[in-house]
Structure formats: C-alpha cells, structure tokens
Length: 359
Length: 250
Image 1: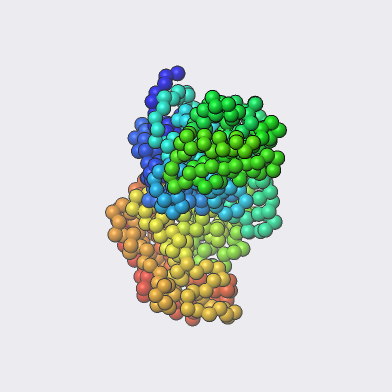
Image 2: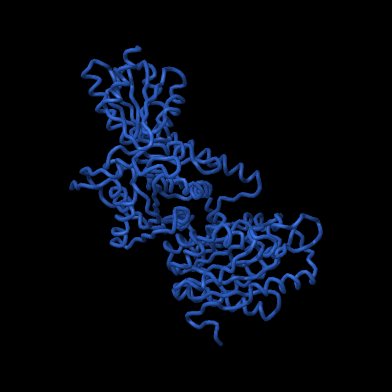
C-alpha cells in the first residue's frame, strides 16, 4: 500500500469515502473547515452528496434523515458546532440511527478561540443531549489513527445502529503526516432492511423511524433496551477488542503512569522517555476509546504503579473517569493547560519530577 | 427505533394526541394523491410527533418523526439518499413557522425537491393544551384563536409570501378547508405539489389554513369556525403565490 502525506482533516474525509460514506452534511467552522473543503471536492468524484447546510442544527438533522434512509453518513464541526449537534445526536441515539460525527475541538467555552483544545470531553463522552443515551467515542492520536478510527466508526455505527463520535483536537486536524490508505469498502443503503425507502414492495406497512414513545411504559422498555445495547457495546470492546480501547508504553514497571488522549499522548511519550533517562520510572497509558473507557487497563496498573497523572488540554475532564476507573486505589493527579494552549514536554516533565519527589 | 413492520399500534397511540378533524381530511388528501400518482412504493413522510394520523388508512408510507422544526432538514437528508422517492413533510405552525423557520426557508432556497405541507392554525407555536398569548385558560369548547394582534410577540408570519420571494421554489400556494370549493382546491394543490416533485421539478409548498381546538375539545360550534375563518383568511388569503410550471391553470 502506498504512503501519502495527508492533513488530519483531509484524512477523516478520505477515510469516510473509503468506508463507503457517500453523504456528508456540514457547516464550516475552524479548525475543521478543511474537512468540508476536501469532501466538497472528493464526494462528487465518487458520485457522493456534499451539502453545506445553513448551520449545524440543519446539518445534524440532514444527517439524521440520511442515516434513517440507510446511508453511511457523516457530519463534522468544531466545538461550538458540536454544541448545536447535541439535539440531533440525542434524537438519533433514541431512534437508533447510525452516523459518524467528527468533533475537532477548539478552545471554549462560548466562542473561545480556534486554537486546539480538549474541553469537549464531557460533552462527547457523557453526552450533551438530553435523555439516557451513549455514543461510542474514538480518540485518535495520529493522522493514521484518524483514518483507521473513522473507518471503524462507520462499521460500529452500523453494527450497533448508534451515533459514533471521532473526538480529535485542532492540532491533529491541522498537522500533516504520512499515512497508509486501506482498500475501499462498498456500502449500499439497500442493505438495511429497517431503513426508510427500503424494500417498499415487500412490506405491508411502512418503516418507521422515531424516538417518541408516548406511553411511559413503552419509553422505559425502550430505554432499558438501549441500556442493554450499551452494555453489549461495552462488553465487546472490553472482551473482544481491548486493543482498540487503549495503548500502553513502558507501563509494566512504571511507578508513575501518565495518561492522556489525542495529541497530548504524543507529548506524553516524549515525557516518559525523558523521565526514564532521568531515572524516573514513568509509563504511558493512552485511552483510544473514551466511551467505552478502558477501565480494566487502569485497574490492572493500579496494582503496580504508585500514582497516576492525567494530562489534558482542559481544566480537567477525563481525569474524572481515571479516578472512577481506579476507584480510590491509587492517587490521581492532574496537569492541564486551557484556552487553546498545548502543554510542553518540559512543563509536564517538571510536574512528573515534582510528583516523583513526593514518592 | 426504526421499525420494519406494523407501525399501526404506534401510530394509533400517537393519534390519540391529535384532536383536529382537519388532519383526517389532509391525510386523506395526501393518501389519495399518493394513490392517484401511484407513488405507494416510493413515498416517505416526515412528520411531527402529534401529526402521525395515518391510522385507518389502507396504506402507510414510510415515516420519520422529526424533532420540532427540523422536518425540512430531515427530509433533505432522506431525499439526498433516496432521490427516486417522493419525500413530503407535514408541520404545524409552531413547528414550521416558529421553531423551524430557518429549516423551511433554506430547504426552499436550495430548491430541495421535496413537498412541504404546512398546517397553519395561526396560533404561533401554540400546541395541544397550551393557550395563545393573551388568552386565559377555560374549559369551554372553543378554538384557539388566531393570536395576531394579541401581543407584539405573537404575530404569525406569512410563510408562503416569504418563500415566494426566493428563486428556487416552483410551487407555493395557500388553501383552506372551510368550504367545499376550498377543499377541492386543496386537493388540487396537494396533487400538483406531489406531481411536481415526482417529475423532479423542485420545491413545492402547500399551506393549509386549519382551526385548532383548545383544551382538546371537539365540540366547536359552527359560529366559532366561521368567525375563525373570517378573521384568519382576511390576513392569510387563499392564493397561489408561485407557480413556475403553471400547474394551477385550467
């Protein structure tokens, strides 16, 4: 397979096409706008549909419609647009409509700025829309992973009929790296019997797509059904595909385990190497899925490491899940930069050095 | 959840929340139109939660229940995946003209090849047992009255007039169901709108003026209906505002 140099935003777009996605609805917002520009050019080349919606609210509901009709469909935005997506994501989760949503995080809250950040963790992982629902959340740390995880996202969206989120930051989206593109896969909306507009002639009554269940008993039954599905998803990743959920580096004998996702994990690897050279036994545990969160991986090293340090480009969001995973077995510390700043390996090392001194 | 078969139970449950006899007429016209144009195997509806009263009809189209205001966007997504299907939306005024004003205007402005049916009670987003601004709740059988003039904040916009200023829509009309002639005109308008879409002509829009009962009470007296239509049709006249392919002409 040939290696090509691609920007993160473009890689997500190309991966969507390789996964059989032929429908994209979105609205430009930096730092994800190159994704639209790329698909505006590429989708017509493969007889696909690119539609720049009037705003993100319309884009997510166009995505809802296309997903209901059986298409592999994607939308994307940056943080403020992701806020506008929440209504549609809740409805799609309720109606069990598959789709892929890429959030290229920027600084917030509010308009914030267009610099890279990781402050949408709670929104994406804990679900910012209303109701009891979950979305699978992938957290790539390289342009190659943006490709691989986007393709996986489409597969899992269809497999579990659920929205799947690619949660990346503006650094990953804007940087270029050499990548290997896998072979394309075909997909047809006609493969989904439940989809609107499918199998008209075989049916006695119409297919029906909804998230409304007016009788409370029906809604409760539906909600517990969703909950069971989320358990199945969680079990699948935990038991069958743990390699998709986390990556570890020098954790076996680590005294201090550093953890972070996305671009931070790249910085943390440098910090771990620097620590090792200075005689500090540090390791890196990187979540690759944020939901389901790789709880067992953290619990495993709770037996051997003496402490954990979560590093994020926020004031501390994922750190809460690290604490939940460890359930008080070992101390969890936090270091973060906010507002669009990326912490340097130097300042993170200093933090580790201080913690090592406490030990 | 997207159901593969037998949505009649769900639809009947939903129908319990619809207390407007005009819905039955409008749904009847839509179903008749689908049958006349032989679109039974290619029609998808996008409706609001309270509007799905296709129960008792011999034919059920595929249906999506859209969030309030978003039906034109949902229909756009469906149509772009299923260009050979006829995709229609049904929305009331609180749905289309209040929550979803942006979605309907932009779908029309794109010339999306869908058909939008707009049930206008002229109550400005008032639904179910809510009351219009300026009115007090009571238990008497009565209509939700047209709330324009009740307060500055409750002035239902004239949607067909607004959409007719756009370049792309091909058919924009307003009809009513208060007298037999108007019902016949409504049948023709909905037929024209679906036919234009099935011929890939572009965006078509039919507004249907329709009174709405307050307090879910059906016992509306004829006098109230006449008063309602007199008041509402003065501001919202029955008229075709855009007819690019001259389908309204005899």
